[in-house]
Amino acid sequence: MIANGIFLGAIYANIAVGFSLAWGVMDVINVAHGTLIVIGAYVTFILFKTVGLDPFVTIPFSMALLFLIGYVAQKYLLNFVVKVGIFLSLVLTFGLDLVLINGVLLTFTGDYRSVTPGYSGTFFQLGTLTIPYVRLATLIICIFLAALLQLFMVKTRTGQAIRATSQNRQAAEMIGVNVAKIYSITLGISAALAGACGSLISIVQSFTPFEGGFFIMKAFIICVLGGLGNILGAVIGGLVLGLVETLGARVFGTGFQEAISAIIMILVLIFMPKGIVGSKYK
Amino acid sequence: MQGERKKGWWILGVLVGLGFVVLPLFIEGYWIRVLTSIFMYAIITAALNIIAGYAGYAAFGNIVFFGVGAYTTAMLMLRVGFYWWTGALIGGLLAAIYAILLGIPILRLRGHYFAIATLGINRATEQIALDWGSFTGGGKGITLPLPKMEIQNFYAMIYFIMLGLLLVTILVNYVISRSRLGYALRAIRDNEDAAEASGIFAPRCKIVAWAISAFITGVTGGVFAYWFSFIEPATVFDIMIAVKAFVMMMLGGAGTVLGPVIGAFLIEVISETVWGQFLTLHMLILGIIMVGVVILIPRGMLSLFGRKFSLAALWRNIKNQAV
Image (tube, rainbow over the protein chains, first blue to last red):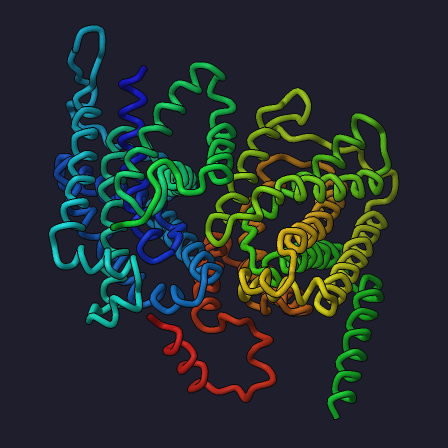
């Protein structure tokens, strides 16, 4: 039970980390983030089916492709509107989302796809717990990616520039940060994380081009729960949501699950607008 | 000069209105339905304009009031035996009350947080309509009592109801834009703290604006339920309707009286005539239009009039607002 909750939470945290990065740094709600995850899943699907690559090995490929998509989208589209206000960026990413969903739909049709490597059914016993290897590996990769991102933000010059821009765009500009470029890199990283997340999700569940809406709803809730633009917040928010949903399904049945998490989100927004962890990148 | 020009616009407006009144005599059933649905989108967009255009609050989940109105009407007609129009009016009232109750806590949130909260409310309400099957019919939807009149007359009647509702909504927009409330809302949009500092009681203004918006959307939902005589959660809480309404509003010009209506007509006419031919590309093209509108004419089409139009100026605007 708890183990299932933690596993679900790790996936959720992974969904939210990239989304939260774009929101926190640029004040852009990237509604297309869910569909970027779906694209990552399709990258794994193709490489697995055609070249026969192990799904876990495909992660760098989907990250690279998604980084490119994110970078280009920010450089040639979003950079023109982020300064103006939230309406424009919201509608723009909604439009991008439609384009991406239907692009994927035209290429791959709406059929359910799944990636099933030979070891997908294997598991080991830990006391009374049954732990599938795939889930354990997914959990470890989720933790690794979050840690890597944290390290990147703290240790590298680019990461420091991103944090500086997030705190104060004008001040960052004044000390010589190329804000347009930093923004493009930020959305690139955010999209790359979505790609990794998609590759992982493709191993544990089947998917269609329309799955994005579900992921984006989860990302909203997690960001609100954990607090915005904060890696730790996304991780904690994801774990909390994973546990709440697993326990809630046991208590109330699966029916009202979504209504409950949406109501929890609204309550947190009203009473704890800064979330559990709060505060931006520091 | 200024006055004469204004008079010209008024005459043009009245002529267009009269044109739509006599139009059903000359067109076929299909086009009557198309126009009715265009009117419906125009009403939803103009209602959204009150909270999103004037007050600048991105109520992405505004379609929740449409669903509340539709379901109230359906329940009152089926379970209590009300007329459709009393059902629709009560549906509008309930939607407005819902907006007031939600607005008290939610309208304190700003920016993205408000947008997300409204999305969450829409989602939660839809889910309740889905899961409370014994009362609402659940995911299978519910069928309303059929009208006891000839089908042509029925469609013509709905056409005139939607047209009337649209005219009322435009009038409401006009009155608001000229009233103290309208000035207060625009002040809130431009700078809420400054507005409050200069004596505007922002919470009340925002709640009143959202309630008006919700009432109109709710009544429209009720008329829609009667018109289609079948509703299900997936259609009446469809977030895409709200997203489309946002695009229509921005295409025409947010925070103007006629902009949203013009935007709705443009998008829906294009959608019927062009995209109808390519069903699979429909949404793809809508997405491209959304991106194009946001980048090229962020202030809406009406902003292009008045000034001399030039590509150079357009390009300069784009460059200026880039990071």
